[in-house]
Length: 91
Image 1 (spheres, rainbow, N blue to C red):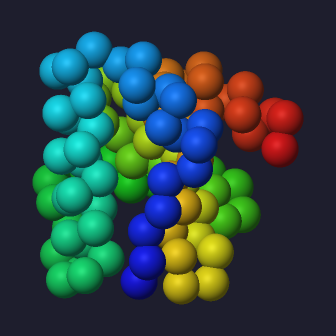
Image 2: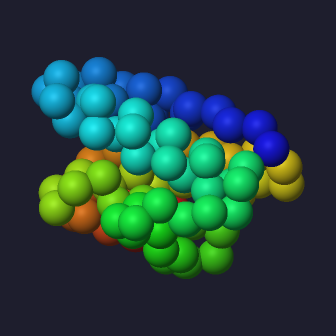
């Protein structure tokens, strides 16, 4: 499986505070471990939203939205629940 970060994800990631960035990276590594090993980490908060859109919960506020595209997982945005909802309404 391949993994890519869309420019929208990178823009939003840069705006996060340093502690939040660490939690986001940890959550993404947990997701990748789940895809590679099949063992789900407690608290990952993996949820299918609509179609190929999925999210993982980083903490109470922050979520990461990603999509499956053939053999690639594309991380689209990182933000709050409201940020994710707004993105999905526009898509």
